[in-house]
Length: 383
Image (cartoon, rainbow, N blue to C red; front, side):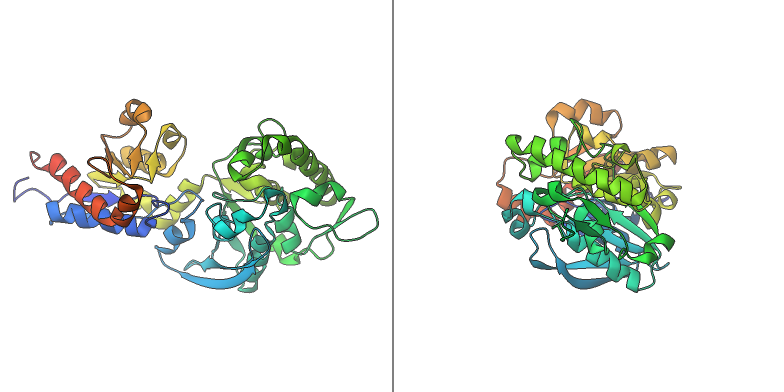
């Protein structure tokens, strides 16, 4: 690039590299590598997420504050979770911050005994701040309770035939005979809830939460049918209580083990998590006039093109006239051809075999080195 050429504008908009670096940390590491190769470039960092783990970090990278709170985790033990308040007063909840599938303590509890009640507790605390617009990320949850815990955490009561309380866990949902909404937090009526999810599955059946997502959370093959039946039983009573007869069949009801169902009952709007985050961190504005966008995630495969963070970021960049490259921790070779139709270059983190421990420990340095090499390849003979 000649010394008289205009300095390029490069947008850096990665997701987190789960288990090693948050999205802001990934963005900074990539930026440091690009700056070594092209110090005159204007770098615009826009850390991203898609509603799963790291969503709170990405959204608060644009400003705001986080508040820690002790609530019940998936296994009912107390955990320290966080909610966020953005500069305009919008609240942020991340399901994975309360009932994460990567939480070893919660995962030790059998899946039939896990509950989302802590997320309801966290939402009530957020409402106490005066927030009346709340973004809720649904990815990365360990629970499969049909959202029963969320409703109980918000003040609803599940009752058996004797009028006794029923625990909001999958193993007990078959006992529900009625749902009392008298204690449901009244502030929800004036609250705009936005569920961030790319999952379109219904609550029950062959494509429902238990059958499709349950196994990765610990649901055994023999448990699928009875748990799905119990959740459907609970859903029938929930439909009557909320006068919402089609909620279980709506797209997204099966998200996060049925949290989507409970949010449909509460009138939530469902949107692509990556699109919401992109809007909130200003990605559409950042790619205007940009020359290049670098995005990435921990592992890219065929699912990347189905609305995941890198795909949404690339689409915005291409629409604005920029090119997009992918820099991920690993790339599935079988997906490389399809990925290459969207991205001008696809790069993985390591240049050769390495151990998982070393890759995690050296993630920031590897990212910086890879970003430097990508930039030199792109700009050495340009201009």
